Amino acid sequence: MKIYSVHLTQTNLTLAHSNRTSLLETLEANNVRHEYQCRSGYCGSCRTKIKKGKVSYKETPLAFVNSDEILLCCCQLESDVELEL
Image 1 (tube, rainbow, N blue to C red):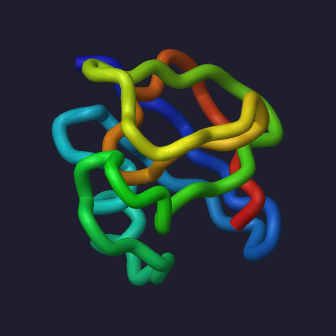
Image 2: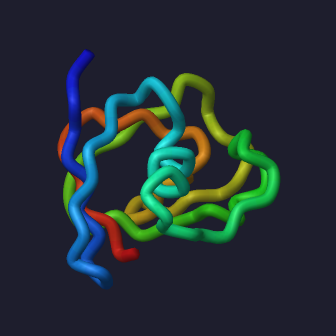
C-alpha cells in the first residue's frame, strides 16, 4: 500500500498516511487533535483547508466542502498533501 506524506503547515509537522485508516485517525494517533463529530462525512466538523495535493472520496460526503477543503474523516489521499493545520 502506498504511503503518503501529510504536511501540517501550522505546526510544521510531517506525518505518514497509508489510507488504511482515516486521515483523522492518523492525526489522532500522532497526538494532533482536530474537531470532529460524525466520522462519516455527514456533519462537516472535520473540514480542513488543503493547500497542496489531491484527495478523493469513496462515497460523496453529505457535508458541503469547498474546492480548497477536505473532510479528514472520510477522504482518501491520492497524493502527498499539505494541510492548514
